[in-house]
Image 1 (spheres, rainbow, N blue to C red):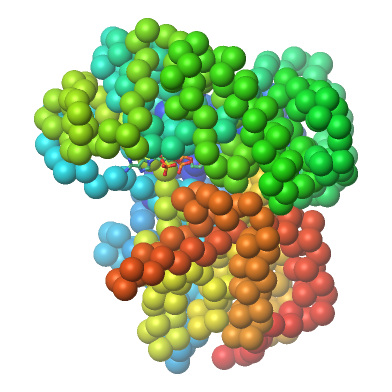
Image 2 (spheres, rainbow, N blue to C red; image 1 turned 30 degrees about the horizontal axis):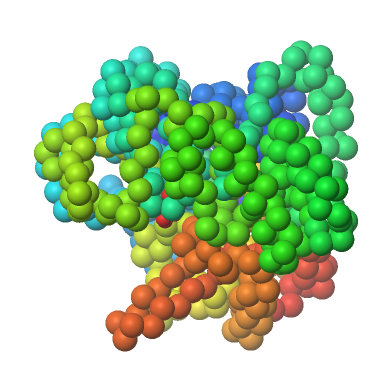
Length: 519
Ligand code: NAP
């Protein structure tokens, strides 16, 4: 577009999620051919995916190939963290502070920091004194030979503890189970997990996909979350129990997210439909896990889909192995880390490795770890203390010219980020072009537009069963000094098509809700 642009990246190369997360078993649970953003631009048109759900190494190679073709590395300063950014009211300029002590200035500042990148580590006593190896899953050591995966880092024959059973733990556990001497899974809350059913993609299948790519893109733009799935046009309660059972059986045996995103349209709003689905999946868990006590511990209490559904490959079967042990830390809490392992209330577990699959401070975490100061030095972290306020999930009043891609309350966040993130970038580019053509250089969300947008986000969220899981990464929980606890939704749940329609209408009407000016 002719703008001068500079990217700052903490990693030593491109890749983001796929650069940082190299734990064994790490792979997509979105169909490979609908995921990557550059797929929209035909940037790597001859790329062939080897599997329906690609693994981390292949994804990272893909991102690198795209970066090569676009020749964007020259615009990015790698191995550089952004620690703060301050808006200068008088000059209409952002100054960005970098972790090497230097600074850069710009007119427009865009965060693309990821919604699941701010690692969350527990604060157990003794963590620093562990004599074995321990790390968060997104800091898995790189392969010694410089390969793009980290899977070869050895846990073979070792006594390994994994803390956490979210989507990451669920991918990691069956892999570690294969060769570890003993694997102890420290589970606080189980999740509803359903089979990924990955398979290789043949040359012929890939050719077919290539041929239908445009139609595929047109299709995923119409689905609520940018996946190939849409809910069926029926409520679960309308179907007879035997028809529901047959429908769910079909979804359970189909690859991917159909069972969550292609289920009954009232799955996340109607308790009765949700109960039926939850009971169906609970029966599957009981069938797959041999020890009935372990099976019961693996069955969640929250409604199906009110937290992210991890897609699994032999996850439940891992618990049938003699070397895998489930430790329920709700019953027997972790008290501390010792030099030789983990101490719970009633036992000590001797370990060579402790792997923290404890997740991320979702959506706002990575933004809030940068000290943004807007007009009159107001801090973004203070404005968002209880929960984020935004307009379109893209801007915050008081922080002109700052845009948050895939940030809180925008339609790319609860979506196939590959597809929805790209569409959001296109929208932003159009806005910057609009400003430039009119010789403007200032854009700021109006307070009233922000208030209305934020209120609608919270009200829509309240209408769903998503509120039943206030520990999901898409909820910000704040415990106040007076004992009050507030919970604020971090995601827009109206679906991609509605979000983009709203954004497009705003663009076509000259950006109502934003103050545009020349400074
Ligand atoms: P997560 O879903 O937030 O899970 C973190 C796990 O750690 C939970 O089981 C949590 O228990 C547990 N935990 C946290 N603190 C703990 C503590 N102090 N003691 C014991 N347990 C503790 O994080 P994640 O598994 O990394 O996944 C995050 C998101 O990343 C996913 O929801 C998904 O969106 C994305 N992801 C995607 C893929 C994929 O697409 N293929 C793969 C992995 C991750 P509680 O539930 O009790 O808090």
